[in-house]
Each structure stands twice: as structure tokens, then as C-alpha cells.
Image (tube, rainbow over all chains, first blue to last red; front, side, top):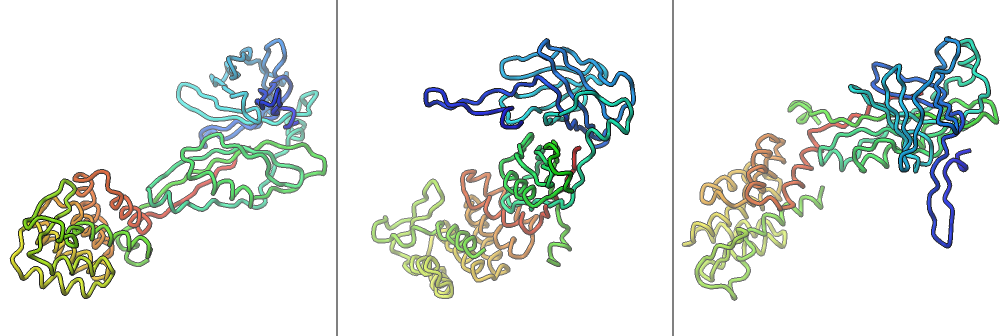
Length: 226
Length: 171
């Protein structure tokens, strides 16, 4: 599915990237400020421009909520959620459907995998069963790059990826990368991380992690005692 | 660390590069735009001292430079020589002596960024990072393009900053 979402095609010896086709149903992670928590939602985009969203934690019937029609502007996709005021934006040149959202006061991101959901169940349990959470088994912490410490660099990285049935991470993509110096340690940490294995054949599941790299200034006592 | 130390020492020696060039320079001291000091043949001990320090023969360099300082010398050359003594002592991990010589050097010529840089390194050795920061700021204001100052500041940051990574899972 990922391969069909964005492929490179050689034409006349020149390779170009094909944009992601958003038509269909996607299971997505929507994250924002930590205090507001994350959401696992389904997005559905039709060829006629209709965009819908289903919250898995929501028992409301009907499950789908209308969004503003999605539009493709150049190689970007835009739509918004009138209920939350979130304006979603996706760069369709990415390897996968996802991007950022913003309101007047907050920002966040979203990341999706193709969903094999035909009908949204009406109960919370039913919906949760559609997309059960994937549980981290080993969560590796990135090292703080020594060159970043020397240069007193702090930063933030948001990376999204897929988790296969064996719990392995694949196709990590940097959604936010404040400085290139943090890329390698984050990728190395993802490589060492694992999730709980799921049933064999279970589809790839989208997930994201954000990392905040910050520096603490040691006291004179701590400096002298080191 | 060893590589950085050599680099810092090299910084200091640069300020006296002219000492070894007495055959091709005038008999009087000339000030160059980058603060290198060119010394004439009148003080061959300072030239020999600078060469010895350049060759990492710090004890010889210190001895020769001290002899040179006992002879008549211009104020600028004296300042450069004191900065070299500062560098040599810093290289020997003797920051207290180094700071003394750098301070003496700066009292004669307070526009020599290398003396500030050398003293900052000596302060770094003593873990006196605030004082080192002050000297580095002054040195950078005199020569914003010098590579030595960010290097010393980076060494300090390694000692005084502790990295922390916080992670949040989104799903």
C-alpha cells in the first residue's frame, strides 16, 4: 500500500516522484500539544472532494463528521475541521499521507496509513477494535549529539513511521526537524525500538514520536564534582 | 581533547609568528592588522622562545622568552611575549601562571584577541567558565572570524551543559 501511495517512475530516463493519491480511507494519528493528547481517527476522502472524519473514541452516530471539502493546491492538500477549527495541510510529495494542522493558537501534525475499514462500528469498543493501540515494547532514547552540546543547540524532532505486525518500525519520516544534527540519533533510536507484535498479517500501523532535545546548565558544584 | 589542546596552543603561538622571521623584517617593531607582532633582530631570544613553544618544547620556550623579556623590547613585543608565556603555561596545564601572564600581556596591549583567547582557555582549565565567557566575548568582538573562540566555548559547553531528551509517543 505504501509503495502504491508514492512511487518513483522513470520516464525517458528521468525519475520523478508521483504525488500521493488521497482518495480512500486512512487511519491516522493526529497529535498536538501534549496537554490535549493525541487522537486516532479515520479520514475519508472521496473523488468528489468530500472529506470526512471518524473519531474512534467517539460513540456518536453517525460516526462520520463532515469536514470542509478537500482541495489540491499545487502539490498540497488542504481541508479543515469546522468543529475544532483545525486547518489541515499535507504535502503530497511525501512518501505518505500526513502533514500539519493549525488553529489560531495551536499547531500539530497528522500521519496516516491506508485503512481497511469498510463500515465504522457504532460502539466505542467496536471502533477501538478497528484500530487497537500499538504498544511500545522497547523505547530507545536518542543520544544527545556531542556536536550539538558543543554548539549549545537545543531542538525538536517529530518523526512518523509505520509499525509492522512483528513490531518493527519502518519508513520513518521526519515531519519536523529543527536541526540536521538530531536526525542520526533519532533514526538510530528508532532502529533500536520495538513494539508489541500483533497478529500476523495485520496491516502496517501509523505512529509518531516527538523528541525534545534540551540542555541543562550544570551548577558550578556539579561542574567541579564531575 | 589532545587535538583541541594543540589547536589552542597554536592559537597562542600565532601571536608571535613574527618572532621567527627576524632575517626578513625591519629592525623595528611593526604592528600588523591581525595583531601579529613582527620583531627585529634586537631580541633573538623572543624569536627563539616562540620557535621552541611552537615545537612544543615549552620549558625551553618559557626560559628563552623570559631571557628575551629581560632585554630592551617594545611594549607591543613584550605583550606578545607575555601572551606566549601564557600559552606555554596553559599548554603545560598550569592555568594560574598562564592567567597571570595573559593579564600582564593585556595590561600592555588590550587589543590582542589572542591574549584574551589564551586566558579564556586557561580559565577553562580552571573551570571558571563565566570568566572564560567574558574573555571569549571580548576576543570575538575584536576578531569575529577567529575559529578558536567557538572551539573553546564548545569545550566549555561539553563540561557545563547536560543534554536531556524527552520523548512523547503519538498514537
